[in-house]
Length: 470
Image 1 (cartoon, helix red, strand yellow):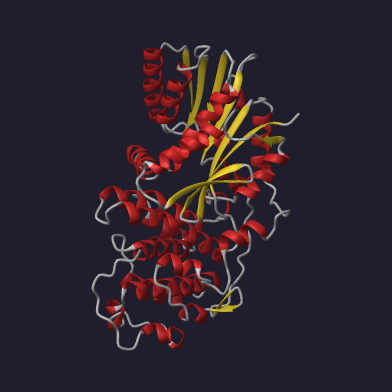
Image 2 (image 1 turned 90 degrees about the vertical axis):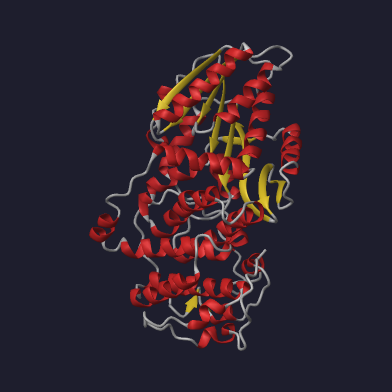
């Protein structure tokens, strides 16, 4: 995957003595050999520096953290290869975490920062277009709805994040082709931004008129955590379907009490010497992360099996799921990021995020030019902000609390929901969609009766369907 940029070989590779080097605090004389490293060596050294820096941040050794950040800045680049790009955003996240220890400085540096609605909408649209993940989820979700609503005359869909009209435009087409004719369709859309809901209402109403489908759109402007279920206006006789795309994990933030940081010894990671990192010599970044990076630490496997029964309680999420259950939905389809970014320690989250976002950056490296402005926007404004939230934030501010499918299955089962088999035809359609995407790295497979979407063998997103247990 690495694209060697023709850098000259180093006679005595610096990789051989990473473990013997002490970070220099001299700002005026960075190591001259840093820029002579080959792509693979540079990627390995960047990971070494990121882990070292994270340890220093976690243990409060800010002077050493600053030195590590300075060295990383010599190698990281938001428009370089995969590892350079990732390092740039993880470095920013670690620096952000340090600055939050001084609220006055942090707030002063962010005073003029403006989040434009139009920019956020654009970035989400670019993510939808550049990756097949949400397209696959929407195809599977829509066909599950069509099958579940067969014969129903009045269908009410509740979209917990009504940001992308493409899904419901496709559903309108599917419903118009029903042998018994289309149902009366109501869609309730929830979103923080009024403009997004207005655009969706306009497009869906226009399409429904063209297809001669009785249609109503009920917009609810607000955050999901503040949702008043009564505003959903569910009526007797309606068949209800609920759709949640990348939303439920954010509700886990509201029950998180501030935890004391667990200091990590700066010379080790979970008790394992950082020198182990220097002994690795893989040929690609993917191999670097998968080949026993930290002496057998594998975030995806570990997070899925380390504590299968010790599910942390979330009063906010449990209450929300109970409220949805009380609506007696005929179907609920949930799409979530599939990774454990909700660990209690900085290092645990950083390693999990490193694995996860490495795969997402690899997707773009394989399908989009490095010079693409659109790629840079997605990496910076979407992935970069998510990484920053996972690494730098704590308590209620940390919204990106992605969890593994196994935990969602436990949560939903406890809330009174039972798994519903996904549409076989929907799975076939999803496979065809990926085959037409022109990239062999994307895969889908069934796991625990649900659908998981992968890059190579790395699971990135899950789609699961649920009904009420009675």
